[in-house]
Length: 113
Length: 114
Picture 1 (cartoon, chains in turn cyan, blue):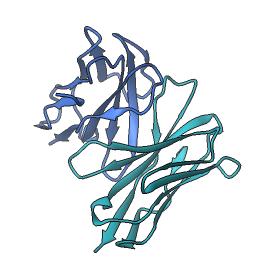
Picture 2 (cartoon, helix red, strand yellow):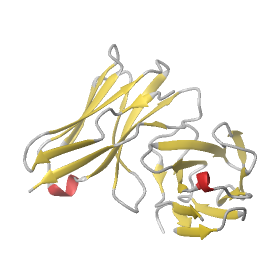
Picture 3 (tube, chains in turn blue, cyan):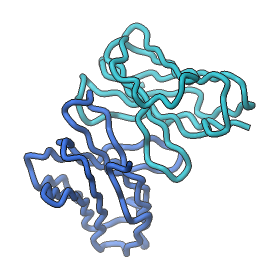
Picture 4 (cartoon, chains in turn blue, brown):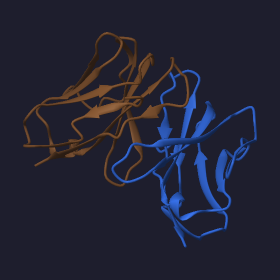
């Protein structure tokens, strides 16, 4: 039972263009969502998060959008840079589970110069 | 160091052996989590510590897995009688307080069972 799904295993984008990574969830109890970035042989690094009371959060080149009715969130990276090439994980938590995170399978982003 | 530290970074062992994985969280972080990532999969929750107690062990896959935390700091994940399906990257994360986000991750221990 995959409660958080990232349906695109990979995404390829040209440098300077927008990267859009998508994530769907099924558990309506989730109230906090995060995006992590992971390079090979390193641990995930926190990028940006959003609470369920908001529909948008922006931090520099990164913006996360949340559509609660559709149980869908997306991460926009503008402009994309080659250094953004990594695996991106969507994660969710609910207020009843001590903050444990449920992760999607990840999307491999490749940004071409 | 300032981040979450895990050791060893790599561990290769024979099936049936016991292994211990160590996590040193960020100083002052009271919440500690263990996850694992199997090949091609997302991260899977294993266990959560608040201080030295583990109120949520629901992700431990079998009774061969156990974990402890001492002094509200270092945690050890032990896998007894390892099986090939235990091969994965084991990741530790900590956060300032229970339920606090974001969690900060270590670089993990890559465990390979021969």
